Amino acid sequence: MSTYLHNFLKFQPLLVELVARDIKIKYRRSVLGVLWTLLNPLFMMIILSVVFSNLFKFDIENFPLYLLSGQVIFNFFNDATTTSMNAIIGSAGLIKKIYVPKYLFVFSRVASSIINVLASFSALILVMLALRVELHWTILLVWFPVLMLIIFSLGVGLLLAATTVKFRDIQHLYSVFITALTYLTPVIYPMSILPGWLYKIVSLNPITNYLQMFRGLMINNSLPDLSDIVLAIVEAFVMLAIGLYVFYKNQDEFILNI
Image 1 (cartoon, helix red, strand yellow):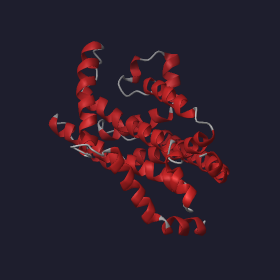
Image 2 (cartoon, rainbow, N blue to C red):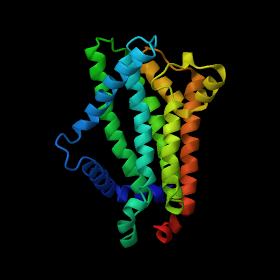
Image 3 (spheres, rainbow, N blue to C red):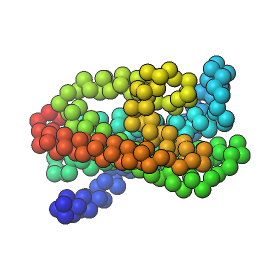
């Protein structure tokens, strides 16, 4: 364990450079740059709020806030896992030239997404202030569901990065999966409108638990149940263990397939 930690600390400056590179590439030739990370969720919130609040008449207090909080969580998972999927393939040139711990490329993609979610979180705070919503002390605890989501996303990212090197079709399949997952996560709609069978399916989605916990702490001034906390921890670390196992089992063959 100490060897892995020493190796990680040794290459930490490279990780910082990789994160900076990912952010620069994402906003290259953009006039507003990183500011789009703040503006994108705000624009989407305005559009979706106008459409869905009038189309479906959801009985949700502060629906824009409800919607934006869902976007913050789901968009992070989407961005972190989708970008991680191509982390190894996209760094083939560097991997072929020198030795670098390959997991750093996945870590850098997730870290870049963390920076983006911090900007989205700032947008959420601004909306709460604009709508004059009371900021409860439970906001101080939102780090927990966010941290568990980061760990869970890192596990998914490692799994996707390792398998995509050998099976490129996963890139296309995952885009379909994410689209389906969007509708199976209560970002736009409340869980109360779902029929019993669909409610059970949506409840099985790990992102639902993180999202509900985040909303409860951020908006509703409610603490999560102990069972939800335990479930969040188990889901996050089981997914991380699976991702690490698959990644380390296949990493020696990356050079043959990239």
